[in-house]
Length: 71
Image 1: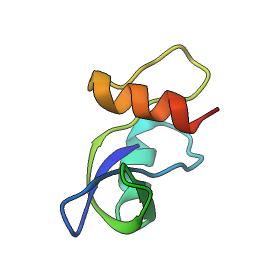
Image 2: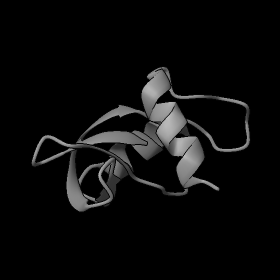
Image 3: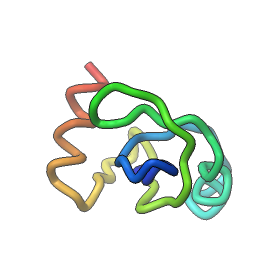
Image 4: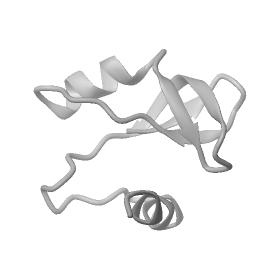
């Protein structure tokens, strides 16, 4: 899930869930890896996608960062 941390940074929370809705609920409060490589607590969710399902984040710059992170 693409999230915003309590400090206002964008980041990523990875988790397993039964549905994107469950992922959105579960991501808040989890530790996120930020775009700068730091960690922070997720305050709100921007978007969740299912890995391996061909779905992409709508924010193209975040998607590019995510793809590099996944390598």
